[in-house]
Length: 64
Length: 185
Image (cartoon, rainbow over all chains, first blue to last red; front, side, top):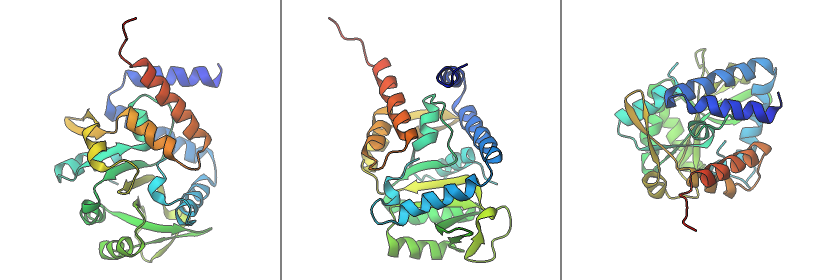
């Protein structure tokens, strides 16, 4: 299955969930992603805070 | 650890108005994208209340991150002083599974999934964001989720867009087109 179709399928599944379950499923997928990619957490934090302190783009615009 | 859902419900209980924005709000609109953090817009006047609230629930404000360590405020008082002097426009809170013993903690000790960001200086005034937000039921508590129009506006205003930002913009535009009321020919 192509990634695009996978995303469509996931969107369809999410439509059937409550808001609470959507938040839970996102947390679960996030944890799985962190476990799958070693060093991700360090890279994520560095990128996040370098953007916040570069003087050009304050954290107030950083909505991920 | 206090979960993101619990934070949303507790903020409501403590009468601190907050609007869910960012990736988790996208998720509520059925976007398949994955995010680690929860972004909440708040009023500037509530910044100190939020700091007290987050420290009460075991979170720490992180100021910066290097190759090996993060710098954090050990107390709510320190966090309040830092926000007053630096005026960052937002605050990033994390929980640490191990006891926090110093202002510098190893990066590996941070629970990335616990991240809650509070933004109080964004391009939409809080009153407008709050007024146009969707009321969503979350385990018998009503929370405010930014409207799709406002999420799109915030995404489009970002100066440096990532590939996921462009995907979010496309998702939101499609959502708004689908939900547009049918016009008579």
